[in-house]
Length: 469
Image (cartoon, rainbow, N blue to C red; front, side, top):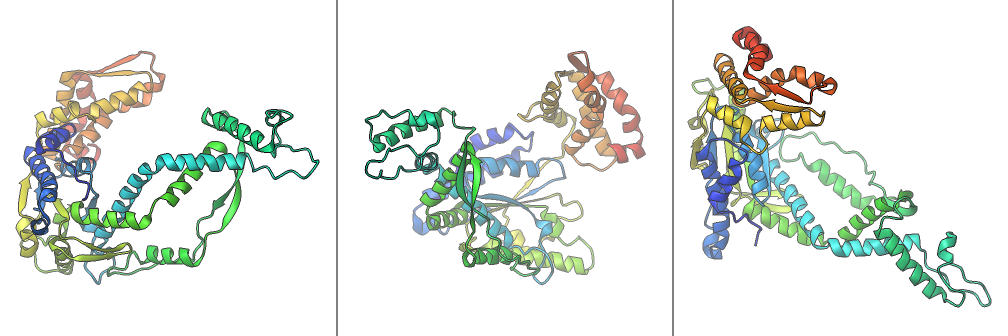
């Protein structure tokens, strides 16, 4: 059974609340969709296959948290998750990426996830085997002594030869020396020593570039995979330090212990059963309301029709094998400034039954964004200035003034939502950021007066605001 996040919806919302202010409806919808993935896995197989995911479309202006929800969702969902820009896809027959590439990318991500998990399972055994191989490099086996010949350790170090007594056998010398070297290796006493080891070079297969339009963009990697089997990798001797050699050997041993066929099977199953694709900027492939049918609009509609079977459920061929998309969850988002969701082709509209509207942000939300989240903007600047030995302090009135100016500039110019805060914060702290290494005072207080002094002239001049803020 695929590994699925089993958090209850309330826990998911609480986790999202740590990073995103407001947008309760969007958080609830995403949390329910995640939980439904787990619920489906608990249903008995005959009915399980019939339960299709309820895809979501999030509608709202730019800078209100749509993409941030996707970013945080990737960390919460213990499932293959990929975020793609719908605007980079083109209709079959045009130069550009075809829509099936996102399923191939999702499968590759699942392969990496499962491979990493398998490496964790064999980590201990791989470390043991790597340690033994490294000791073999440090202590080459002692050849059997010739009759009436003095036996000596193969190591050149005199302190190692002295380990054995005069009546000791070569085997006992070797074992006692190996144990001593094992202790020294674990204590880090051999970290400065160099060892000779054989390292595989990357395959220098012929460079192949493919410029195509319809479903062949991954042909380059497939051909290179084929060439890697035809042209075996060359090996060469390298002198490396002991810690680097140990890491290389651990990686080699882990790869030997992992069965890639099992990894591929698990990854494809996980992609099919619990994969999530976040389609950002879906409004960019929508025909404009009331516009005539121009060539770009025809191309946009073509992308939608190409997208339809993927969302509906089809089989996509990848280099790891066929992948079914019937149970992949799709979450789409768009600002829909110049169009509306009903401008999507009707068949695609029906594949996104859950629609969530995200609200524009006001002064109070901006204040909370600056102060409340775990990764709040003010906390980031305080941490950056602390590296210079400066304690940066923001008065509450100063933060409210920053939020007020951000809202005012958004209203007078283009509304870019919370992204405006980044621009304004950089402008406010421009002087302190430049002078911080030379400041003698350990504290720097940002007051409301300081904010107004640095922003009022610009924020009140609409032309300046358009270019600077």
